[in-house]
Length: 410
Image (cartoon, rainbow, N blue to C red; front, side, top):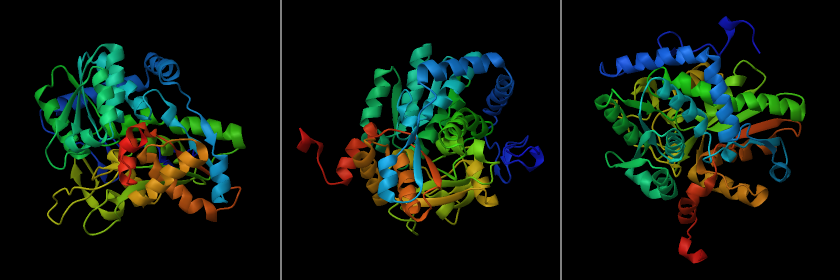
C-alpha cells in the first residue's frame, strides 16, 4: 500500500466531488440543501464509531458477512491456466452485493429523520435490498423500475411487493434503469421534507459515488484478508462486471494502491460494440457528458442526447458509468473491456455445469472475461472475480435466450 497520500489513488473525490474531470454535483436548487445535508451527515458518520458498530453488527448478523472467497477448482482445471477465485457476494442476504450499501444509506436516513425511502432499480436487486431494510426498520419504501425490467425481472418485483414496497413501473424512454433513475429524481424533488433517495450505484451527484463506494469497499477489504490467508499474497488480477459500477468499485478500491494488482472492469457489450449502440459499454463506445447529477462517460449522439443502450442483463443496462471508473479509465489505473450477451450466456452455463453456482447475468459478464484470459496466463497467476449476484432472478431471461419455454420443464 502506498504511504504517501499525495501519490495515492484512494484520496478522491476532491472537495467538489470530482475525480479528475469527472463527478461533481449537477442538481437543481431544490435538491442542493438535501445533498449538502447528506454530505455533512456522511462526513460525520465516517468518524463515528457507533455508526460503524451498527454497520458491522448488521453486516455480520443480518447480511451474513464476510462472504466466502471460493477457489473454483473445476473451472480452473477446465480453463487450464490461472487459478480462479470467486468472491461470493451472491450469498449475502437478498442475493447480491446491493445490501452492503443499502444498510449504510438507510442508517443515515434514519439519523436524518427521514421516514420515506425511494430507490431506482434495474435487475431488481437494489430494489429488493432497499425493500428488505425498509421492512426491517419500518420505513415506507417506493421503488422505481423500468417497465421493461418489471417484465424481465418478475421474481424480484414479487419479492419487493412481498416485502411491503410500492413498485412503480416507469414507461418513459425504453423503460430501463436510466428511466427509473429519472423518475426517482423527480420524486425526490417534490418530496424533499420526509424522503431519502437511496441510490444503488456509484453514480449520481456527490457524495453518492464516494459514499456508495465506501460502503461496498467491504468486498475488497475482505478479499485482501481472505486471499492472504488462502495464498499468502494478494491476487494478480481482480475482475468485476460494471453497469454503474458499485460492485466493481467495492472490489477495486482497496487494491488501487497495490500497483502489482491488475484491475479489469467488464462492461455489457450487448450485441457487440457497434455504431448502432446495441450495447451498454459507456467507456468502450461512449464519451464524456452529464447525466443524473454527475459528469462521466455516456452513450450519446452528436447533439449530446442520451442514447438507449442494450444488454440482456437488466443490472448492466445503463448508458453511463460511475465517475470514479471514468477517472480510473482515463489515468490508466484500470482496464475496461466489453463482453457480449452470447459470451455472458456461455459463462452462465459453464458456472452452472462446472461449479454448481447459478450466477446472475451481471457477474456472468465478468466470468466470461475470466474465461477469455485465464487459459493464456501461468498457473501461478491468481484471478479474483466478484460473483456479485445469484441467478434466480434471471432464469426466465436465460431460458428465453436459449430457446426454451419454462413450461417445457413442468
